[in-house]
Length: 152
Image 1 (cartoon, rainbow, N blue to C red):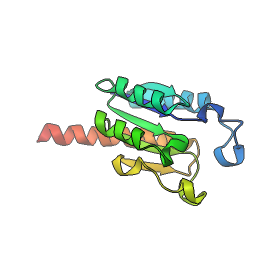
Image 2 (image 1 turned 120 degrees about the horizontal axis):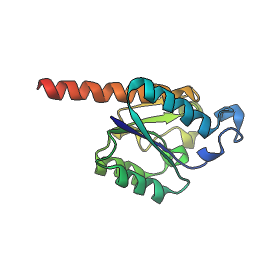
Image 3 (image 1 turned 135 degrees about the horizontal axis):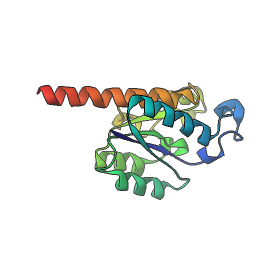
Image 4 (image 1 turned 90 degrees about the vertical axis):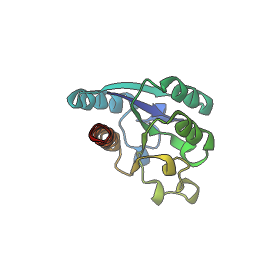
């Protein structure tokens, strides 16, 4: 199984960007931890980060038929990008949305996710651990789907 991990704008600044909100772990720290978790689960990861909405969409298009699912932290595009949501539905890649902070306890403009209605689920407010929980949840959901398909 291959899982994509897609990170959106400003996540390349983790570790120094508003540590009281986003924590002190860098994106590299989080991805290194996730690689270890993926190894224990027997899955491979493909990771990408971009500050550009179009680049994130292009990555999803490139991952179609390659990855089995995606863990995504779309950053601020969560709240604004119908195009990113459409890319997920157009590629039919199942995904779990992850946010370091609790978006529902933030400013009003950050409380709505354009992606949520198309996702398997959302994890928010658990800091960097949310990525691990998202990966584990996605792998489990995909395994259950495969089992139900196999047993017909």
